[in-house]
Image (cartoon, rainbow, N blue to C red; front, side, top):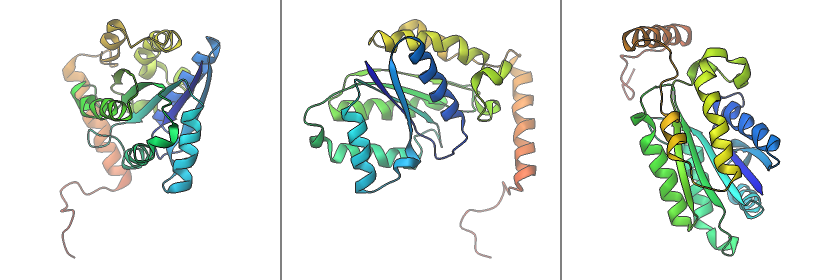
Length: 221
């Protein structure tokens, strides 16, 4: 079995990449061939789409790992999917199994549902078998580090990854148990304490990046 893992984030050091590489290592340990390809390396345009189609044509399984940007796929990832769909005839009927993994800093599962629906819609339009989608919340504190180095912030994710790998290695849809455990909050804190922690992190990010939250996007000077 050959598995193509698409890391759908523009950032070279990202939580998406950390999840994708962890998945690759675990699949390798399960005697499955897996490679990770990052979307920005393909970019956009005919040559990039050709490379993507070549990679897909050689894969038995495709796993898309992507962050949630405004509750949806990043634009560069969406563009790649659209370009692949437009040239789907070049795959000559090849239809890999397709899995989706979404993640975001918000712990609520609803934040990733729209993105997972988009992944499913893509698979259906391609004529690929949709093997299910799962979403992980609260991934921001991982900060691009390998999951084993992220400590308590990746603990919940790391406990689910063996289930994810078992499903993919067996070429079966994500199990109900895998889906159920993926949506659990990673924060071992009461809800009120979690809100305080997230708000504090948000304020720090605003301060460090000198963001103006009350500014109007298209306001004239």
